[in-house]
Length: 254
Ligand code: NDP
Image (cartoon, rainbow, N blue to C red):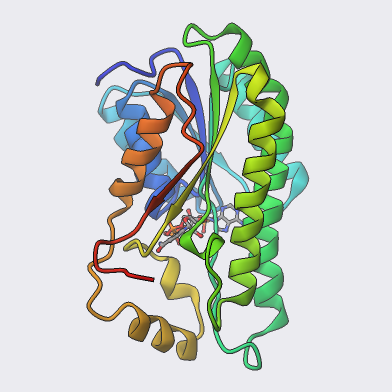
């Protein structure tokens, strides 16, 4: 294990799959103790075993981020167990795109609940602990890294509500960045293009066909490509705040 984040504690939501999973592994490799938050307990337990087998420290925290009390309890358990919180990565998210006439209202609700309210609940609970860490940490800084999307920068047909949630995450991150910069709490947003994960598989059949056509011939990013960006942000010295990173597959022009 390298040690740029030794003595730090990171909480990663969406740790059971894709970008969150790769990010938790990467932060653990950098020396952070990691709290692994997602609903699928078996998946995060498997990841925790992998982290500990590699010499790291991990805590399994099954939680649904759409439940404010559950999100707060996840943050509370992390701080109780590890004693602090230095880095928060909000990677939990869902994408349920498609023709707005065929979409189910519950799918739109779910995107708002996970992608916006989930981030809101976890950030709110984590803020006091992150501000404490920013004051007391050897590295003199703390981090919130929110995973938005290129869909948080450019709208597209059939993507309306996912666009709305990701524009929201990007905007809130920038507002929080301005609010907390003077207290050494950095807020960063990462906006990936297409990444090879489970995200695309939760959509209705008609939406999956549209997405397959849009990304035909595109070699998608790997979750580790985004984890690299998280590590770049979090391991930077106090003076360097990376506000925003956009990462597209080379073949993705839109
Ligand atoms: P995955 O579907 O692979 O992972 C999504 C994660 O979110 C899972 O760990 C899932 O865990 C978690 N999650 C979903 N709902 C909840 C919930 N209610 N409470 C807690 N955790 C939840 O997708 P990705 O890794 O691709 O997505 C990660 C983030 O990256 C998302 O915000 C997504 O919007 C964003 N993104 C992804 C892109 C891509 O092309 N893949 C591109 C741009 C952005 P569980 O089901 O166990 O709860």
